[in-house]
Length: 94
Image (cartoon, rainbow, N blue to C red; front, side):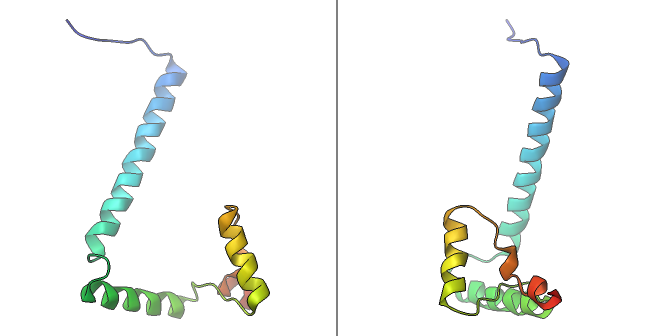
């Protein structure tokens, strides 16, 4: 005895879309964990410092100039709002 269900075309497309999204998420996580040493180890600290230096060279970091901006930055995180205005690249173009 086999179990089967009938799906509409739109439900089938939605299911495929969700599976595709999950596959991309898993691939992204696998890539991250394959590259990143175990957290907190000496190897992880070396890796983290190197990655940070690369980000700084690319200008890919946040720049907070005072306590008011720091408070705003963390309030945005708390309320799930973007912090793009604090990105170095955005400020240097301004």
